[in-house]
Length: 228
Image (cartoon, rainbow, N blue to C red; front, side, top):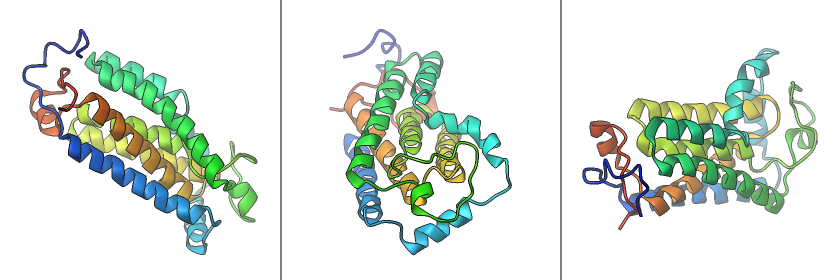
């Protein structure tokens, strides 16, 4: 079923192959399961060492990272959804940003309860305490990373190649920022990214999205129908 804004590009738009989208969603699920299997047993030495490297940096860096980090907050889906509607007048990325982004946030809470791994404050003796460092709650997975990568996945088919790269770079910055403020360990961020990316791909599979070739050659078409 097409929305009223979909009719203009319906005849010429092509859709991504459903199988390719499912493969990407499955890859996200595999990475999530693999990271959860490690995280459930605690913090391995290599992860602690990686955290020490990524958690370093000059004092006050958290202030510079605060603004981009909000892309992974619960407000992020509503902001991105509004921008998507303003840019494309297409319900798929606009509604998907809001619905899939909020559901990804909630799914992260489910995974947190299942894995039951704490945050760096509880698990590590030495780390950089910065503004916004949480002292309670669960760590695996990062809800901010889940939301950020879900939004990148949902909007990716409508973006040019350069913009698509920037979207995933911003999502990665969100994850690194969560490590910087000592809210999460690296596996928390990787698992959250996999969760959000996979769920965003499931949204794309369900509603149908334009092929990347069509996006590159015609601009972001608005009429891609659901996959057959």
